[in-house]
Image (cartoon, rainbow, N blue to C red; front, top):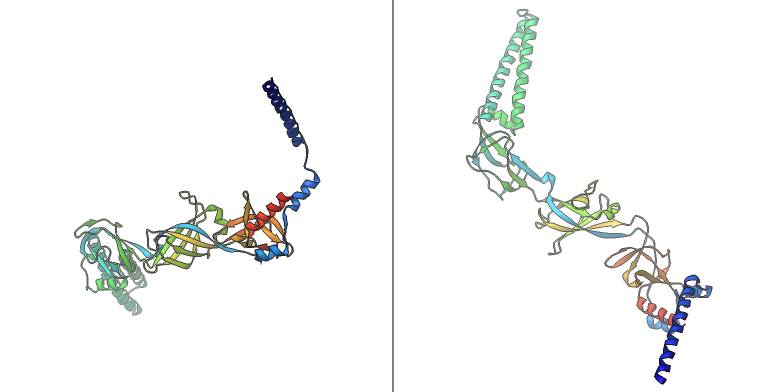
Length: 393
């Protein structure tokens, strides 16, 4: 009987507790917190320390100043030859490789002879030049002779005009033949040598357009080549182009002239004080990034084309913000907070909005005011003291 009575008592207590719990939950759903509780929550944001606590903690503070803050954003980059420092050497006419003077990987200087092409087409251009020059000389002498006869009334004015027309025509043909030779790479000195008969072999000499190192090489002795066929590439690595791929969220921070540091994590090579030369106007679809272009000199063969590098780009906030050390910030859940010094011994727990979380400091966009002082040491201790006071109440 005692066991039955004890079991019935427990069941009764459980039913009564359940009913009371339901009533309590219902009351919580419809009721609001009393003003006294709201005021208490507000008071919990303040922490007052006595003299002994202040002496033990020895809190450090800084005064806040709102300003445009410089910081660095990181990006990946690819090194390519600078557009003006790479030259594609092609044959301007069809022919056959007659002589090769250089090898792949060799350093060459601007104007250095690279190879010669033996070409019937080049021979025809030389013949055209010599014929047009001979015709021009003949018409020039004819014009001079008829002009003198006309002055002596021996020849008529119509004859003089006819000779003038022939002279102008031959002069145009001569200039046209010169232009054809200049179009395939000959200069005035070479053309003069052809006219004077110093070098009339049908061998077109091809010279280096820039100084640099020969990269691609597609030359073989006796090989037949077609007009405009690319035969080699010369790269001058003294200046390179670096394409940096920046997060689109940072696009508004980028400006031409922003300073850049170029480095690799795998070694100690680093080049700083470079700048953004241009910014591509549209998003790069392949990388979903904003592309910045940096022209950089190479130092100790770094950076060179083909390398993947890291970029540290110096930017500024678009509006004035606050810069605080990381030691000043703690968290309550996911919410960052700091302790603002109201008086010598009174501190306010203040929630803030972080704009950027960087290696050594944070940039705060809201929650703080100009000339306020925040604690930069012992913030975890202050947080613990605040909780202790809250629980003790």
